[in-house]
Length: 112
Image (cartoon, rainbow, N blue to C red; front, side):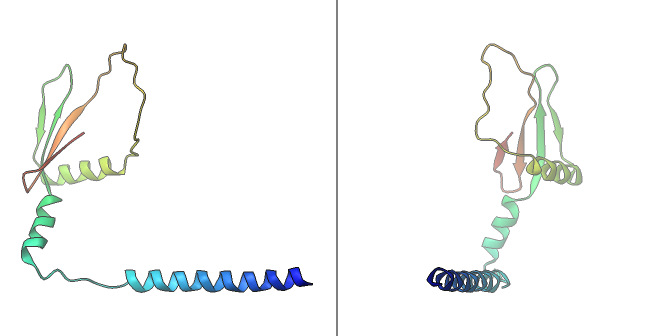
């Protein structure tokens, strides 16, 4: 009888904590924040806007893309690919890899 009593108390407390957690998460994420600083807004915009992609491969010449629609489509597809922290590569085997650089509006670049 005592075990059932403690089990009911545990279930009720657990349900209360879950409901409280969901309420707290929804309360903090359902707010709209306005950025009043124009410099912060423009720096975030320019750091996330790709303007040019340069591809290169071992046996082919490098190719440059500067069409904004193609670049955004490529960047969205590249971002959706799974990322792995470590992939074991055999040192004796030669790989044909496509490498490239992605240039952003603020002058920064990312290598892939």
